[in-house]
Length: 115
Length: 242
Image 1 (cartoon, rainbow over the protein chains, first blue to last red):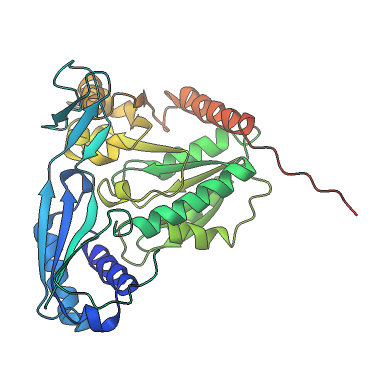
Image 2 (cartoon, helix red, strand yellow):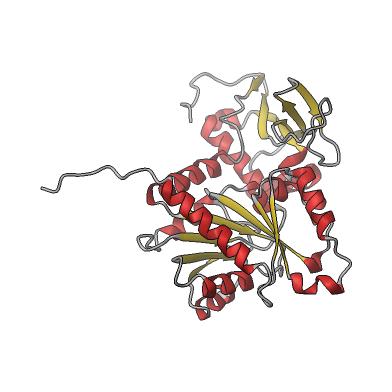
């Protein structure tokens, strides 16, 4: 629902991080989006296209979204478990575990520039 | 934020996870709010739910019951209108409306701006009544001590599994409109079980602002949390008066 704000946050983040000349040479942005981040990849793609059209920025830039499943780490068993159906348990000891190590992220992972 | 790189960017740059986290700006503001509330010893509650689950009605009743016990102020967010703030004021609660103008959630920056217009000197508890929405507000930390989520009996008991992040990030789930439970196929046990699959530590209560059922327990929860907060308040640095 707040996908447009997230796209604007992508633009702001890149503008802070890189010079305008470099920004114009971006060809692809890779995002890492956790299943638990409440962001729907298709809607994010649509929002990205909409923001491109309305602002005239990031023309020709592709957005690649890597979706990450939820994993928790149980410190008792020292094991990671993949979480399915939002049942937050350690698969080894079956105890509740909410120590998320993957799946809540919302990150710009890589930025590709033309050479 | 690191200085901009002076060299020309070429090829692929692998970004540092922390600097490129897209909600970092919000988290930074939320931390500033949290520090300020800790300094003042004000308990900050972020109250969330679907639209129409009874957040405002619960607060009206809470304000009436605790008017001689806690000094409660409310910041209420909505897409449009001042109606909720007016309802709260009619119940004798000091309330301010944040009109988001179409934004589906409150962000730290909106709270920070609102706080510029509010005196917190005579405040024990500040409650943020978030925009009615179980999706987006879940992702935005507002610097709260506790997140309280209402699940109305009329919504159905399947909501925790449908909106897992909200229940994962909440400290207390209030099953509201409990007076309607006898008329609805809503299993309190199932709702609690599903919420605890997601968040084993979540506390759960049933309340009805209309009949008063569960209101004593909820009010006690609020008073207890406030007293804990006051006890843990960091002592003010003392200044010698010249």
